[in-house]
Length: 277
Image: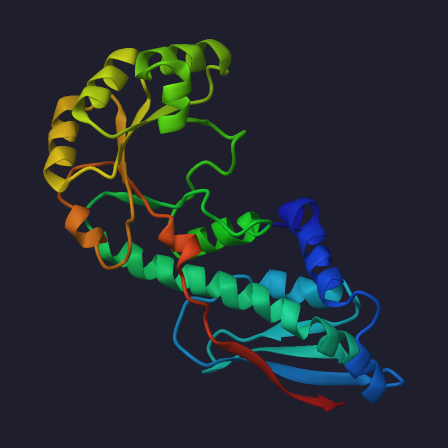
């Protein structure tokens, strides 16, 4: 995560997480350490996986004390990092830092596993907006670390005409026409379709991307043939690690999966062996 994103997007959210965990004081730490002293702890990983978010992990500590420093290891077995500095800051930021790192690393690991199932197909795996509130910047970043790509970041990022938008507009053609008249020309227009008739209408209306949502395997193959390269194609609908391989022969450009962010298990990490130095 670059420094600008960290300062503008991540820092306020990490600070909120720290404030949630420390409303007035860290009673336990203050009880055992009436006087602050320097210490050192080790970040350990208890299972294989893809690590994502070490910079976010570190920021949870440095927001409490900017003198805390880290030494990261990439080829030393299960020992990932050394944390050195104020023992009060280390103890108070431990849980928040680990929460971010475990969540982000779990998403990166799960994404990597799903991406590997599409290897050689030419299909791009993308995420969705099904993210944890106030965690999107972290979760979508973790998807990219795992080898996936980001779909639109938020509602301001692009036009995606879903079923309710289409119903409100009075049909696919009307919805696309309204979107083209309103949205800047630099934004692509994607249409979510559920039937072949909707696919035809989206093609004729000039949609840039057509999403095939919760269709049968055969219907999606027929839809791709019908589109015939006149729009980019995406398939979506309850896509997981267990069923994504069966979608590889449909011929779409993208497969989107909400499971990347809403169903990935955390990676088991811990901060251990804190001692005075």
